[in-house]
Length: 161
Ligand code: PNS
Image (tube, rainbow, N blue to C red; front, side, top):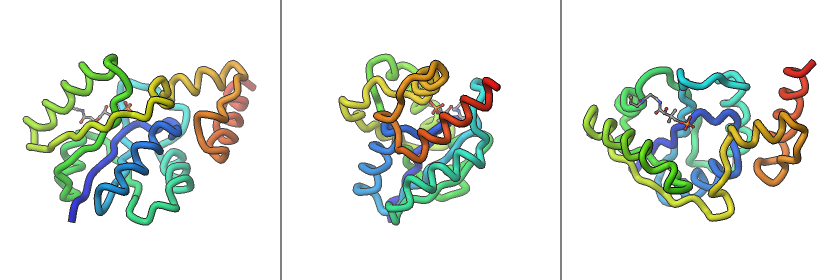
């Protein structure tokens, strides 16, 4: 059985993430979405909130499950019998960092990384960008499912009040 992990902060999940998850789910037997605690970033949503949101918008993919991890991604892979990471590459600007991560993960535990080219329509999309747009009252409905848009709007509003 081919099992892969799609890791990320998912703070919150966007259509860019969903594009990669959907395409990975058609290529592999099982896709595990791992919400990782990224110590270099402060988050808008708790890990539990992010998991709930991801579950809601990926429920239609029967071979996708959601989990979380605090620590090295390769240790998550080891404890879940996963030897392949799938990541989206948006642009050249992603490449240096992603290459470095993939080489570290290969050296640490022999975990392979497969890069999937992001659909051109999502090549500029990131959770950070979407949060910035929402924080200034901009329309983010093109960038994420409606269920996530409403949660993002209310979280941004509650942060301001
Ligand atoms: O969505 P993001 O924030 O770009 O995802 C980055 C993430 C969480 C996948 C990456 O930071 C990560 O793998 N963190 C776990 C810690 C780790 O294994 N780091 C690599 C070796 S130092």
